[in-house]
Structure formats: C-alpha cells, structure tokens
Image 1 (cartoon, rainbow, N blue to C red):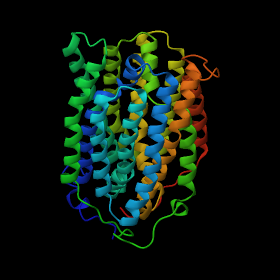
Image 2 (image 1 turned 90 degrees about the vertical axis):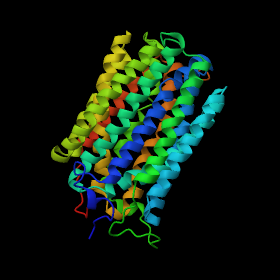
Image 3 (image 1 turned 180 degrees about the vertical axis):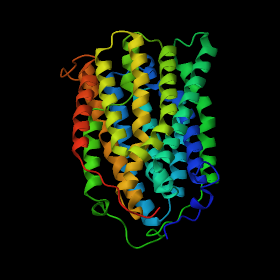
Length: 417
C-alpha cells in the first residue's frame, strides 16, 4: 500500500527520482526562463519608465502575492478532495502564460498590477498541487533530493532567462545599460516562447498519482486539524520570518541605489541564480541526512546577515557580494522547507498542507512589501527612514524566527511513501 501508480514504478530509471519529478523540474525550468527575462527588470521598468513610487511597487507585489496565496490554499485542498493534482497544475501554468503578453501593452503601474494579478492567480492554482505531486511521487528518504532538484531546475531557468535578457538588451544599444519601453517590450515577446513550452511539457510529461488514503471523488476532505500541531507551529514561525521578507524587487532597487546599472543588476541576478542552482540539489540531499531543521537554521542565519549587509551597503560590489550569499540562503532552505512539509503531515492531506504553507507565506507578502516601501520612502507624510530601513527590519525578523525554530521540536510522521 502507499505506492503510486506512475511515479515509483520508474523511480530507478533516472537518479532514483520519478518521471513526474523530472517533468515538473523541466516545467519549472522553462517557466523561470520566461519569468526571469522580465521580472528582474520589471521594478526598474516601473520606477524608471512608468514613474511608480516604491510604495506603489510594494503594493503591486503585495497584492499579487496575496492573491496567489489565497488560491494556493484553495487549490491544495481541492487537489486532496478530488484526488487529482495534474489538471490544476496545468491550468495554473497555462493562465500565467496567457497573462504575460499583456505586459507588452502596459502603460501605467495599474496595468502592470492587473497583469501581475492574473499571473499570480495562475501561480496560486498550480503551486500546491504541483508540490504535492512531487511529494506523492517520491520516496520519503529522497524528498529533500527531489525538492532540491526541482528548485535547481527552477533556478537554472532563471540563470538562462537572465542571460537571455542581458543578450537581448545588449543587442539593442550595445551595452545593455539602459531600459526603455521598446527594450522591455522585446523582452516580453521573447519570454512567451518558454512560457508556453512549459505548459506543454507538464501536460504531456506528468502522470497522475494515486496514493493510499486519497481517491478521486472521495467524500471526506482533509481539514486543518489533520495537519497537526508541529506543522501549524512551523507555519507560524514561517509567517514571522516572511513578515520581514519583502519582495526581491527591493533588493534590485537597492542595488541600483548603490550604483549598479541595469546591465550590472541583471549580471548580479545571474550570479545569484547560479549560486542558488548549484547549492539547491546537494543541500536538499544533505537535508535528507542531517535534517531539515538544521538546514533551515543555517539558511535563515545567512538571510539575516545578508539583509543586515544590504542595510549597510555603500557600493555596487557590496550588493553583488551580498546577492551571492543570498543565493546560498535560498539553496539551503527552499528544498528543505518543502520536504519538511511532507514530513510533518499525513499523505492524504499533502495538498492542503502545501496550500496552507504557501498561503501563509504569501499572505505576508502584502504587509511585508507595503511595509518595506513605506520604511524606505514613506507614504502620505508617514515613514520614510531611507533605503537601509526595510533591510534592517528583515534581518531582525529573521533572527527572531531562527531562535523560535531552534526551540521548536519537529518530529517527522511515520507514513507511507
């Protein structure tokens, strides 16, 4: 009992991981190629071309992520209820792909908000079912490896996407140092190709998984109580951590603030993602041996030091170096956190658990990003303590969350694969 129909059968064929894990990884790779061609210059486009304030940028990112978060909870619960993950995941990727072309015609920050809203609706639909599908398709002893590989694929796509963005911008003016509407529109057009390829890979490459305790059309649906106290306490600590984790758009703006050009910002993000991709898979596998909690504590400590560094940065090379450390943080924590969720909850409630986990984090995106914008620049005559303020606040929240996580006893459930 507990074996899946599609995943475990071919798990020995490719590094001990199932076809579903590899297909989800390729899908995320292509999606990030598309997303990162645009997302890293989007805050610069908003600020420099459309004239949006940092508080408006914070509002855009916060509303987008909050929308995504609410849907993550619903889609995760629905995938448990229906006993099916694939259709929701494919629908989510397709919706995000269809939203991207509208960035081409966006001429106000309100229009960008609308596009980001639609894109995050797609992310909200796909994330929890996809993560549950990866967990369902993987032996518990290899979950850290599976989620680490998935994050490495995601980040490898980011590396290629940023590299392509640099090449495209350089093809326009020879240096890639500037960004105008025409350059941004060209990036949007090129980003559509990998976005729609990703949808095709997931639709054709993934097989639905059947697990014990989860059947299509089942009458019982998992509730919050089934997730257990350790999981809920872990989520509570994640909420505290995320309150200080504003959108990475502010890191990009901070890098520009200390002297980096558009081309240098993209190169900085390229190296960040190279580090992230290199660390994610071995760190995920290491969490299978050393434990998820240790990896998270190490990562959160690095995060706190990185954000403290950003608050004190005075030169472009400071931001560049700090982003390298930031890549290590991501590599250490992303796969371990996703694997820990599956460790702490029963198999029949994984979709719900990933929905709650992702929703709790995402719901903090709105207050975190809006607060960062206000701390930096202020709004309505209130706030505005300068560029260092949001990063000092983020460092303090991370240190506090790490202390609480260190005190929390976490015991993985004994459950079927």
